[in-house]
Length: 435
Image 1 (cartoon, rainbow, N blue to C red):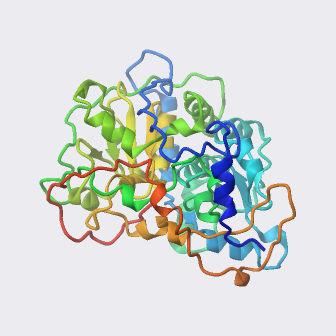
Image 2 (cartoon, one colour):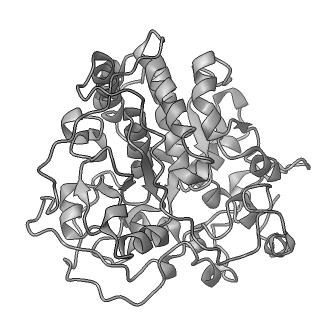
Image 3 (tube, rainbow, N blue to C red):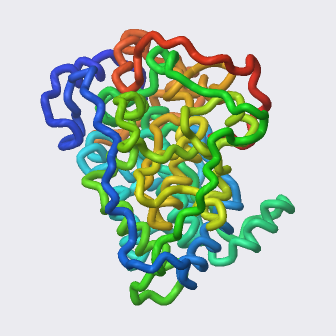
């Protein structure tokens, strides 16, 4: 059985491989954060400013799938199912969407690797190997990216979203097994630092103190624009079904960036961008939290669209398509779903890594799930890295205690400085589907 061992971190310290190029990442704990990506390659081609039939159909299907709600799978719940000594045919299908070198360095036993940028084509041509009759759990780097994949799988497999929604509301058996992301991805499954890019684990010590602003009226967006921007041109690829059209658009969007890591924006990079004195290069920032939480505090300049409504063209047309888009939520999970949906619609969207919790940890605005990001809450479940795997029962694993030694060294992602926050409400309302 696998226990927490400090040699994991010693191995990483000796690793000199280039970042992202191999399973063992650079041992630089304070890398320069990447800039906010301003590439507009996610936009579809064409010149028409009038929504076409295809775009309307695509947005309508996305709207139906988003209405099904958001779920993640916690690592201990997944481990309980995997290690219950019953038939593996009842286990969920584990899809690992990390890069092959990271997958080879260590993955959940039984996981199948399809890198995120390859997933749309695999779903299109039927080579994904994902069984239609099993639930899917996506193991990714941080969980944010895994929810991008889970949205695509649900779009591909849920032929009748209306029937799925009726079953959810009635709490009856679902017609289609659901796909979910592993909450916080591999950072919650294992404490090995070489499984995710160095410097990208959450550390609440580095997030506090970044400027937020409060809406003038509770429940409303203070910065909602009055302009309605023209929609992107109709999709013209020769594919027959709306699902195929969505997957082709997803493929184009995911491959508009050099690597899947470029789909995430570091909070520190966003803050630097917003404060560089050049408003012309600022991205369009979209909060996908509830209106009540938005009113308590949000990133300056944000507009607010609930994540389940970002594909509604009446809402998405409030977003300027000529500017890069950064979406954020509570912990980065629903933000990534929204980012994927906006990317399919043609917007050059990126997700804010760890959501509002990566921006500011004030108790008045932080998600109730903030504690789940604490490094002291991480598990150390088995990994398959080519050697023998001891699939012990869940009862053999002690509750997570995390890594005391490395907690203070993982602050590079976040904007670490002294800033006085503007006034915000002291108590946040109950969560409304935080993610």
